[in-house]
Image (cartoon, rainbow, N blue to C red; front, side, top):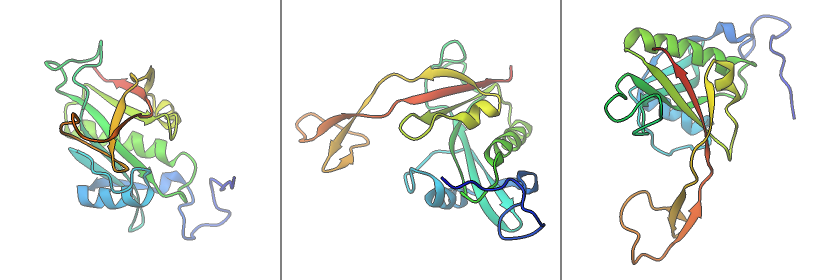
Length: 188
């Protein structure tokens, strides 16, 4: 494993010298998708979002964070179908590997403040794929850990997940998917 100094010994260079140097602003979904393609483990996989933020060092976008409506119809005791208005979900987060330590936490904090200025926010949920990471950055930004989601399986046909549609009569295999760590932050 390689470690990177949080601060460079002198000012300048091709990487940020501190996470305090980042500027955060709203970006297009297309720009967010290009960042996720570069640095997120899901790559080109599509995502739904309401608002997207970019982390900039100078003119270079080094990270993206996307928020959208919640996918879950109910997370007890926080919301159900009738009360989920005002709840948001972090859909994706990715930053360049060269970003200094604590960049993700700072990025999340600023993006949440900007989201709350633009929308009424009752709370935010996010998931960390247990097959990839545990979501430590969410704990660092004040999210409360709520445990693992229920076990689920995906239907695979010819080496790819069948996203939607009928499975009866189709030759394929059901394979378990990794579970997700659930994190919640409430503002009510």
